Image (cartoon, rainbow, N blue to C red; front, side, top):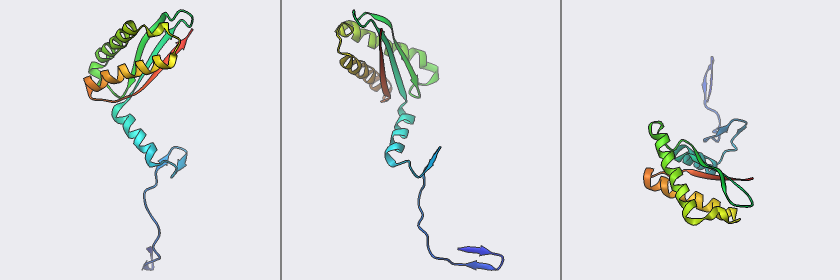
Length: 134
């Protein structure tokens, strides 16, 4: 449609639809990316940081859990304390730090935190275990 001071004129139809804008580009954000963003916004993320002596497997620091978007601010410290305790329990029971299979350790940390959040808060945050070998 063309609207001018001379009147209104009907023009040829044009293709239209949704266009997603993402900072730098237009139209390059697909349904997969939007689904990932929706999941992150709904469930949040948890980082689990653990520093381990590479030779002995001794825990030098942590586990320390950091979260964004998955716990209400009021109970934040309490929930993270409980989740950290679960990870510490798992590490003590399984003696995983003494092994050199860091991938297995990451999997166990991820599963422990995932179970805790699923049972306690009915959430499934993105869990990123970070193991620093010193």
